[in-house]
Length: 99
Figure 1 (cartoon, rainbow, N blue to C red):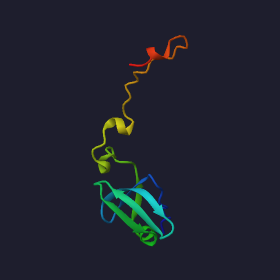
Figure 2: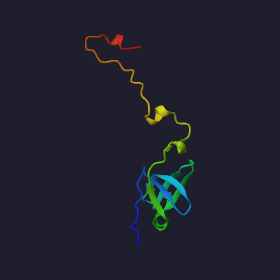
Figure 3: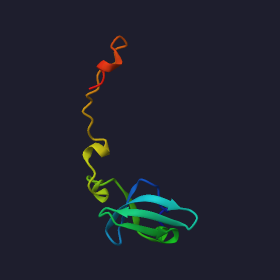
Figure 4: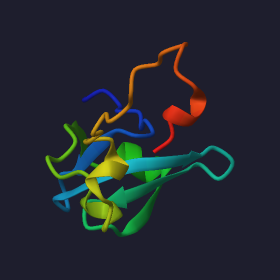
């Protein structure tokens, strides 16, 4: 018997029976359900009992994990920061920092 894999928000999993990758986005303890977002962007839900009876494995985040969120710029993902900030100089008037 294989150990039960508990769902964790933010982690990626694969349903081996359906060959679908997804990320857990919410766990609703009140109705014992797990909300997921599939790699293609669709939203789905597992009942807790179904989760534990399914062949689900944890996987690494896909290389392009932002695909489900569509249209996000690289800046929104934190990949780029031009770091055009000027060093702070206590002697320089505030107006000189503004561009």
